[in-house]
Image (cartoon, rainbow, N blue to C red; front, side, top):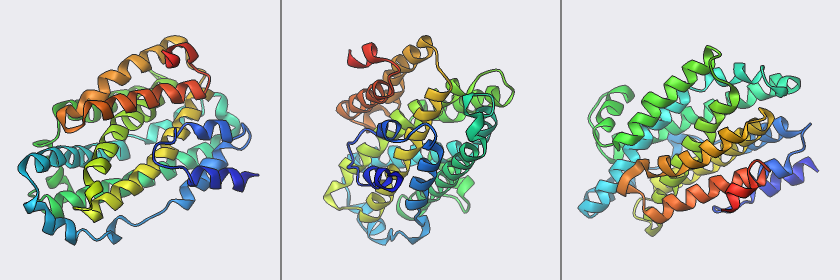
Length: 288
């Protein structure tokens, strides 16, 4: 049964609600479920051929390159941020009802961090080999990317996220608040909106390497968000936290500015509500 559930997850199409894993994974099985998903989705960010993208980039219209630069630069900064801010989550999980799954949950957070490092490598390669951002190191290129990333993205990932994880590490906030920001909002709304904007823009095949990479990143993020949703359930969140999460979803969806179409922003907000509804966390608000 477990393998059938895993295959069902992996066959999911782009628009499937990532929260479906919550319904599929039994309470005694869910950490193993997500670990198996992660194991099936491994890929090498260095193996993607970006040469056609680099050749096509100078020929794209200026406005298209402006929007793509904002998105790629934003991900260059954001993926690095999420990769370094994940460590306190495993420790916080020990304080919740997940104690019986402690080692497996910690392993899932480790697997997620490994994914995030790979994502950061992909977007650094795009910044270097395609966009041609200056810098001899990934750190120098991220500094250059900050000049192109939307200010709201920098605030979310370089100010709000580190502040929350510091509170989590010091015990000033709980796992529910942590995954609400990290998994539900930053990954489930901001990343979701940015990834789908990129996939839609690159659907014409102009930059096949970048599109392949973003597709792979988006598949990884599905299990991250599903895992975060399960952690949110296990943390027994208050109604107030869920209501705040839904209100903030609209705010953070707009963080990309005009680089992401309004319709794409609205889709990501609806997906957030659907996930919470599928987890029976907020039927009324999600339906509205």
